[in-house]
Length: 159
Image (tube, rainbow, N blue to C red; front, side):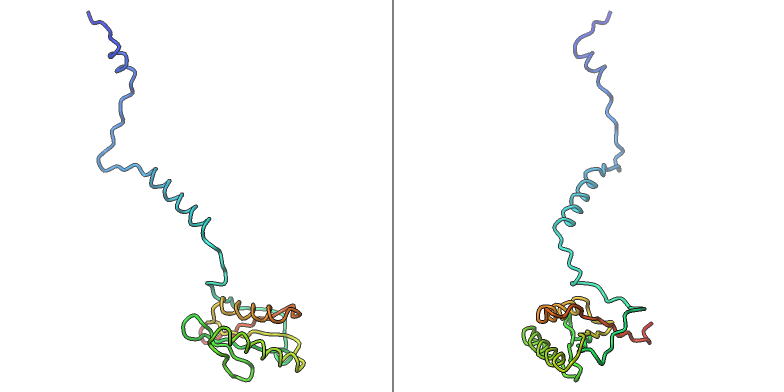
């Protein structure tokens, strides 16, 4: 006759171990780490729309007279910087501080001649960050200007 010992009872109660095939990997930890990294990068990144992006093509807009506006022209330059010009065609300096004072002096002269608006006319290839930078210069220097109009010059042959 067979007698039961404590070891026999514990063996009977234990569930058999599931066997994994040799090629099978448990991906649960990998998925957890992936979500933790995703959450980390989302919470620590800064969302600055001025750093990247392209200007959209405007189909319709409010008419603003270019003859009544002080126009600042922007075209794609070398690298990330845009070439900024006045309506007389003279390109402003590449140095940021000098360019700021040149833009302010130019717009002051234009507004003193009776211009009613300020318009930034940029090529489609000019980065949004550059347009925003010039718009910020104008807004900081001329607090009484409520609107700065932005126009995008699109090359119809590229469509």
